[in-house]
Length: 255
Image (tube, rainbow, N blue to C red; front, top):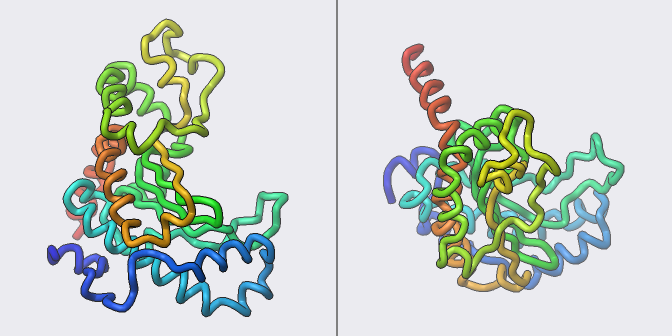
């Protein structure tokens, strides 16, 4: 394994020989029960099951996928603990006060864009499905404008990526895409990329049966789709890369 992966905290497969990068029937049962008993008392009484059957296997899945990412998405290589998303819900601004998500998930963001939405890779395992996605979700206002400006000139390149034959066999365009009903202010309504420019998020998505997470092929399913979607993620992050490099150069000058 490349030394830089070990340096940033990404473990090799041999570091976790007893933890398999897929889930058990017990994990699926736990998620189904959590959906019915979403309260702290129930969860805390079964925290050991969560840690053993969900958290540890999820970290193993992330480590294996991240190891593969070194070849096609090196800018998204991060420690597994930072890639795995919290199971606790943010209930501050929600009418739904249930404390836990009923799925576990991971988000491979681009290094340097951790505190913004940026383009990245997503996976979750719920009682009803395995969801795999790649793209950008709810970008900040400045990011939204930057992507739209890029699409004015480079929309044909982006369409080719979205319509890649191999990709479309295993992923579809984001079914929950958010789009404006009218052209954004300042953009020509007749532009050939207006269907793309009106969107507020861009990406591709795949839904699979929940039982997919119980199979030894889970990591392969993720890596196959992430590899094919990598050009899309790179395209969406293209307007932000210069800002990331500028920040890095500034930090190095201060050291």
